[in-house]
Image (cartoon, rainbow, N blue to C red; front, side):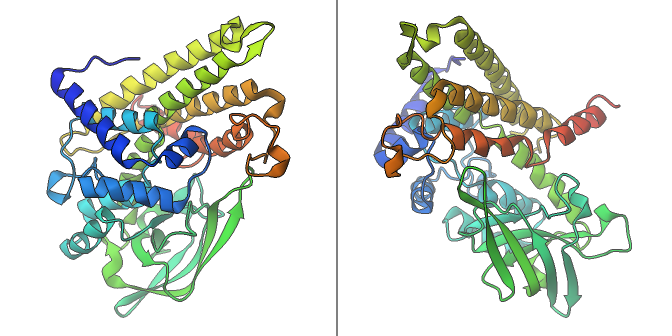
Length: 394
């Protein structure tokens, strides 16, 4: 769907395009557009350019370094970055822990951590899920016991995305076992270089090292690193998850991926005509375009409602469900279009893959990797329960 912009919005779009053209390396763009992984250096270089421009914290209040952009300007920026093949902004510091610090943190925490996030001085990871506490996050068992001016943390976190690169992690810990499980949780900021923190890789189905297990063995964390009140961390956790779920939708990413898929389908000849001209393929692409249009409109409404400093509510669950499912459907069709060449674990960097078309090699890894979208951030089944209770009153 094409949105009609006014003159000021078109000027802003042109400014964004010019900035991207001047600051996004061609190799980074090529890899993103081809659904291939980018290096940590590529990600941080792009975020560094945005930080220098003052365009990194698009969702922060202006007084803390935010852009002050309107919902439409945020939408334009996201769409142009996705279309150009820019790496997705690492969300854990910028769009997850930072809003929690802004809302619940002490002034000292704001003064110290927010500038470091803006300047890309810290790489944050998320310490929420545990082996026995995924969708039922409140069942977490990682303990933190007060010892003078420190907390001593023991336990495990899992599915820690890009934790192998992180130097900081925000962690939900149990500080009281004698109350209802949601009431005995606290929110801690932990330096991952602290003695007792161990990171172990979990290799995913696509062959990548993206997620990890993190173990805490008598890790001493300064009590000043508690965000909000002790035993009130569940409030922080829920607040953070509304931002995470809204961000997972990835409207701009889906639009760029669908455009790329259509280009591929137009170039594949089957029975003497482009694959995109075959009725079944064309029907599926039209269905995806309609679903994506609905996600985009929901996204714009959600962002508009939160513009005045509000928090996305239960509607972020709608967005999480719709956005993740359409992204999975695009990857599924992409894999089918690649056909027999969509072999798992096949990458062009390998000599054995020299005969594989460039577009086909990431098809299966992308499909496998995106299975996670409907699980993390609160599974889509859980999101439907939230909608039923909070919106439908069931």
